[in-house]
Image (cartoon, rainbow, N blue to C red; front, side):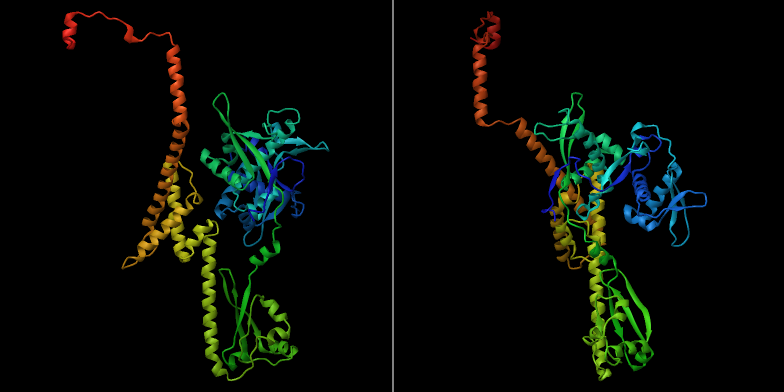
Length: 525
């Protein structure tokens, strides 16, 4: 997909769908100090209130509220349940929202405070109808496309505020060349300090990490610019995709829907005549639902008679990729292709048992594979393949060692290295770790070697940092302190010419009288 996506300069000439990030949470002193994650939660609730497709309710006092389920906020934000609760409490204490909670599965009622005391002129604007409205940054909806699924909320907010300032530069470019480069491209200026305030970042390294993600995805282009007062500003050139593939919503819904493989169990005539037990297995999901439904033989006999066949007392059809409801409504032809007639049930029972064992084994393998893929979904492709040979439990242990090593080294050395920056080195280290354990007579578990693996990963980042420093020093040395032989020859000729034209007299032409004692002291005879 990456090779098919093309980007163009942002010109503010197209109407796109967007969400709104209220500006007052940055411009007003009463609200700009709240946590960034609280601003994200508020933005989600704010847009739900302004969404015409979200049903609004009115309480007995005439106040408008919406129903919001906790799991929806968790899914939309990507934050944990505890984080969502903490951020909502922060918004409640500061007076931006009010929440009425209910026990059980009933959705909570959330009220949005619309009676805000705002003093900054940038917090509001007057619309065409003369009404005072909250000002906002546009957050394009294409940022939530599957192609940009790696974007963090910090990256999304950074792109949105830069894109908003870009609108000002585009307007100014009609009358001034201040924000237009020599190639005619319009840019806007932002400092790292301003961006740090947007995402509540403590260091510039955090800003750089989220900014680099936007650069890698093609949404931004950055040039560094220094002023006379030694302040560094960044020239941003905003990009937007020409076109994006349509998200297959139906496919995503199917992935979320439990795909059940129905396995009918009828061990002998007694069980068959009395009841039919079957269990649903969820393919690709960590669920195993047994005995989800019990049906009388009479109802099943009627269905089989409608299809033109008699009820199979000792048979075991396997129906894949159908839900339990679709099985009951299926036509007789679907059963005919899978049902075996009841002959010699005692001889069929061993094969039935083997079939069950194989089915359970396949399901266990699928479940284990799903757990692995889930743990490795955010890892680079090459590293993910290298880790797939381990069990899901071992992958979790190795991932913990890797993350601990990365975070500790970055914290100790004030660096900002990612897993992607040392992917090849990590893969090679994993190979060496596995080979070293294979040669041992008594092999150790991954859990027992946690500290060793962590130290090995930490050494990878150390060597990577050393290599980067050497490369930087070599680059500086080659650029500033080395000249080729031709330049050195020209340099000597120039210096010789200047010395020849100089009016200074050589010290060798000065006659200095000396006494005999001085000559004797110098050893001159």
